[in-house]
Image 1 (cartoon, rainbow, N blue to C red):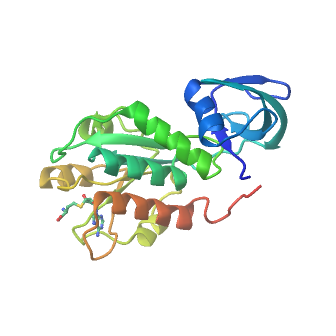
Image 2 (image 1 turned 60 degrees about the vertical axis):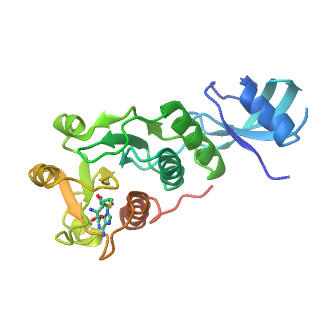
Length: 246
Ligand code: SAH
């Protein structure tokens, strides 16, 4: 049987008793057909990963007894994704992939050409938690409420560099951008399906922390641009360089 990993919010320590919400209890019992005495791994983003045993399992509730810690809490890369508010299933896919790629925060943003302005943040957070369980993360990325990009950048913390995916062909490739920039931390910004307006691109160009980069000669969909930029950053400057597998 594969080991089930569950993200919980309760504190984790030896001897703790953790009560699972109905949805997770249903998943354990009805979906994964686990029973009393079966093992589960728990993590909460703060205390590392712990072995736990199902102590009670009933309709819509489960209690787990926490045993030994299996992995110490390790910091995730401090890497943000400023994601355009795309149509529902595309943004959900992007949240899942960005979580697998190790982002610490996903901030939905709207801009002049955004076709969609609202999204279901609790649902995105649930998708991020499920992806974190699957990919063996020890934490779950924060998901922000959608915000207008201009508003976000007006109060931007300048120590965080902003890698702007620029499809015009006028910007250098990512390795060159990284070589010419301080170490980071970084945020990745990708435009909506309609791209950024000339006025937006002009305003971005004036921001000291903004680093435009080209992702090659083809016009990528926003979700492809987000995914590939994160992968390149992790490979060149992130935790793909010195993987820490326990
Ligand atoms: N302006 C595009 C549409 C935007 S593509 C068009 O002409 O059809 C969506 C977003 O993906 C862009 O705003 C940009 O941030 C990113 N993107 C797509 N292809 C890219 C490339 N080759 N290099 C850098 N960014 C790219």
